[in-house]
Amino acid sequence: MMRLNGLACGIFVLCVTMVVASSAQTLATLASFDGAKGAFPYGALIQGTDGNFYGTTEQGGVNSSGTVFKITADGVLTTLYSFCMQANCVDGSFPQGGLVQASNGNFYGTTNQGGQNSLGTVFKITPEGEFTTLRSFCTRASCSDGTNPVAGLIQGSDGNLYGTTQLGGIINGDCTLGCGTFFKITVNGTLTTLYSFCLQANCADGSFPQGSLTQASNRNFYGSTNQGGQSGLGSAFEITPQGELIIIHSFCTRASCSDGTNPTAGLIRGTDGNFYGTASLGGILNQDCTLGCGTFFEISAKGSFTSLYGFCLEANCTDGSFPEGGLVQGTDGNFYGTTNQGGQNDLGTAFEMSPQGSLTALRSFCIRASCSDGTNPVAAMIQGTDGDFYGTTQLGGMATKDCLQGCGTVFSLSTGLSPFVALARGFGSVGQTVRILGQGFTGTTAVSFHGTNAPFSVKSDTFLTATVPAGAVTGSVRVSTPAGVLRSNGPFQVIQPRSSRN
Image (cartoon, rainbow, N blue to C red):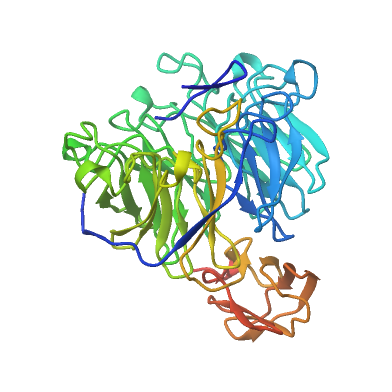
């Protein structure tokens, strides 16, 4: 347990193929948090339409209650907001989730504490740092609207924001404080609680969601819970925008929990249509991992579950252990992520994983003097449109008076992948506007959806919008720039109108 200015900062604590050696890659530490400019980042970064990266720190800042920050690809760090600027922290405190940039250009996020009842908030912040608290949790009887969100938000295809709270909701014998909720909130702050976890006996429907959500082309949301399910050790679920929930997997339903337990990260949808994720515990049992050191898994669109890798396969867990952050699928089709522990110094790793479960160790943290490169990452990496990966470590970096072990870092990891264009959403209907991020857009001459040219508007050198054209079919989006043609990081799925479906 780490402390900064007296405030606690907790560290959350198969089918194996092979481990291969790392290919050429370069890690650069872009910034070290120092307490005053933030400390202990938990949530993943997001790339904004201006090409810069945005995120939160759980502590640090003016009031040691967390920050919202911006950082350039060159490492220029700017604090946009320090939490607890208002009396009794009614503006929120201790954010643990990342941000989402909505179609209106503003960023939205959650805080784990603070607000009117000190049980968390939803907030909005402009790219310039103008801050608004949209919602304080536990403003309904018995906190039926939820409390203490850990994950960030996503914007659904209907324009509303969706998320989960870790606690609160309907109270019962299994959940005296509530086992968490799934909610919708408009960009103006009107909140609707759509589901309370642990509605079923023994919480068979899951409890305590911590990871972020993802929305698929069927417009349903997918995520995980840290506990609950058939064995009480977590679940993966599908839930409709109206709040109808289906459990697609309960963890620890295989011998010795080889399928994993207690996921802290959400699911992502691969380009093959299947879902992928990590469980922070379970998997291979050995002297280093008596409860298992975590797994990498696949769930098909129909709910078939496959364990692809159990961490700590190598002696002394040099391949990593306890993955707590989520995954990102790179433009090469492989998945990239981090582990909180393991590696050469047992202080975390960055890894590459094939869809078949072959792991490549990319980086062991703390291989520089005084761990200046960072330690113990807990957030997912993202792939920037320049092709490199960007992430944070929770600890390490340059030691300061507030953080004797370092307050965490922001890093970039180059694996030699080329620039591309990123789609804000990977599906849509003809006539819908698609937001596209990239670089070198000034002077763009064409945008096409699988070969069908589309109307487009260049907003800046790093951001443009395009309209899905009539006749478009599912496939790659291409942007023709003066420097060459950039392809999307995955196929854009063209959704037919509901009346046209069989």
